[in-house]
Image (cartoon, rainbow over all chains, first blue to last red):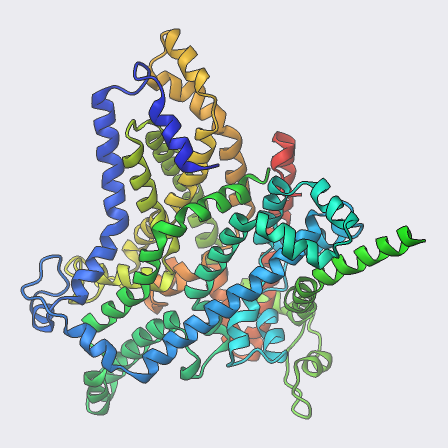
Length: 311
Length: 304
């Protein structure tokens, strides 16, 4: 399961039985072409965000702009309060959401993992069944709203708190790293269940917990769906939804500008952020992920492979 | 005596640990299941006490009318066609492309390069659809977009089956590829050495060893995807298309229909609930069937 070790092993295999040189060159060309396609849009967005507005209006978005400028980032920071508030919201949601969901996941999957826990099968079924059947979107939204999840942080955290898929991943981590005798001997030493879990089991299962925490943190950082369903107050927007709404507002004004014959809508449109500014905001959102990505990637790979294979 | 009480204490403590997750599941997953009753109702707001519960209790039942309305609308056929069509195409395409790249990556003799490829390929998986929508917009935007000369993209539905397909492959191939690669790295290297001593070419080895070895993984991912064939990716169809009305013919899927209908009138709310319920019901049988098939092939890999 450790990709680095696997690659090292693959590198060591005998040279006599590997693909021929021309074949390998072709493989490199095909793979590299696909890889470039994977990161090209990202590079394009960065270039646009550094393109001077005059270049945009004459030749549009281009990989080779006529003039460069960091103005978009200047005006991005001038957006001021709404942007910082969204940034703050995203951080709060990600931190609290990740912390809570990891805690819930550890405890629930620990119970699913313990063979000597008589209600293990019942709780496992309760979680698994929701992966296959649900009430549907409208009833879920209406129930959540009725429970008070409306225009508050709870609405942006609680509906995504639990993922049965993460329970499976975590339980598998427990299965592969914790021996039953360890738990038994802890119990004989008089350790209570909570003490055993948090003082003995959790430190051993750290890599698994890191995987779950990263999956959750990414889900919360990338979330716009909960905001779409439960939030209509601008001060509560997380970053992703802020970006999404920015586009919607501009489209709306453009459409109405034609109908209303310009005037007010056109003026409002002129005050709206420029094209390059929106791309700068995109970059601003993706950059934290891009920088953290090389470090967290292998944890997620480990988690996903385990979750999918379900040993 | 002490044995007994200690055992009870243990069960109590473990049950307490289940409680946060259990309560969440009850409130956020099981309670809404009772809301399915709305799909058999003419949902009306009870103005004396407009809470969800009193609205549901006081709404008149209308039999299967909501379901009839869904199927009478001209959207029904379109959204079922789109949901099934796109999913069927993408399941096959993702599988073929991801397996191909996994095999190629595994044959690269420079581990560092293979790792760089894999890392970059996986990156799109972590980008939200909202940001992907901007990526696509950079290419297709009217007047400014790189490809704006070719078509008025957000008003002309013609190109969208291809655009949606490319966006999906872009975002998901890296993920599937990693799963297949993990399966390939688990293959005993001795098999390849033996085959090469017997004079098998690399191409023959791929077809005779690699593909058969990862077949269980291919089948499992395939069947699990088929089990979810009635569920479309809402983010893709809603954000990447900018929810543009002129495109609805090729971009309406069950999930976007359910969302739009939910925001509409009371009648539409009933239709939304009915369509969502049907989707879940059919999806349930698909997953059960898929799981039965998986457990027949490979008992270890079945979901339950």
